Amino acid sequence: MADVTSIEHPTLKVPYDVLNKKFRLAQKTLDREVCHVTTAVSELERVLFTDNRSASHISSLLGGVVEKLSSFKRKAEEATQEEIECGRVVKRRVDHVKEHDSLSPSVVAEWKRTRLDRLLVEYLLRAGCYSTATKLASTRGIEGLTNLDVFLVAREVEQSLACRDTTKCLAWCHDNKSKLRKLNSSLEFNVRMQEFIELIKSDRRMEAIRHARKHFTGQDPAHLPSIQRCMALIAFPSGTDVSPYKELLSDVRWDQLIEQFRAENLKLYQLSSQSAFSVVLQSGLSALKTPHCYRGATGHNPDCPVCQRSLNALAAPLPYAHCSQSRLVCHISGDQLNENNLPLMLPNGYVYGQKALQQMANENNGTIVCPRTRQTYNIRDAEKVFVM
Image (cartoon, rainbow, N blue to C red):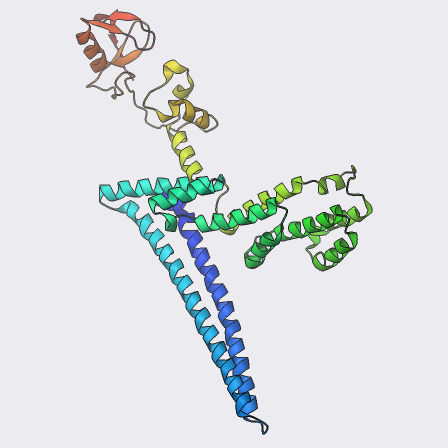
């Protein structure tokens, strides 16, 4: 269960962070509404204790208080409903992870299928296949078990940056300002710097100066060299070939902003740079990988996943499995070689199980054929092998 929990940590962490974020946002909203109600009531009390009060004025103030209270009630109900929905998502995911320890084989089997679908959905989302991921999650009914909302919001920001629009990215930075500050994120600064660069490229230099005065003052001292390089752009034409100003004016910076946003979004929700599907797949391949998987076609085991052509290439950079206890397996039948299935060596040096060779001899009048070299021998030519 410990291994499963380590892999499934983001599954539980993300909805908890979303719930925490909604709670803090709701708290700020309700505090603001309470302030509005208090102000309206204070104004009503002030008018009630004055001599020049009128029924129409008091009625208007009472209507304002009722309106503020109605707004407070509506927003409180909306916030409560959102928190309840987030709580249900957290509970559903906790119950889903707990199914791994079920005593029912059918429940565990269904959990494994659902988990694989979840991992595939996340992998597809990271790969940018949003429609396929959404369709798979909808078909399997696992929308609540995946982080679709997080990645779909990120897609909107990425699309806006690809269209040279910084509005949604800045709004995202504002919504997550406190967490980004804790992460020492420079995303908002880089976005503001790109806005300055775009003003320079469009030859609106006075607007660029006003933009710099508004957004570059009070920045972290670590950003001072970047600010200095940016301000120097005012003295260069937009088509300059002088480095590093040529690089600052390049459109490649937009792609860099998208990459930085993706990395910051993953950090924000404590998601690893690699998807859980990649981690699980690589762990499985590494656990099964042996030197025999790379000794040519004759050494491949048809039942070994790593020996398959597609997975063999994926496993190439991974470490070999650490086997403290090895087993000999018959290449023909896949059965283990032991005292009940003695290993027999043919004259060409290849070793197979006694049961498989005997069955082959019975079917061919005592003749056996080596499956690797296609050489023909008599069963009496096979010799016993003793493993120390």
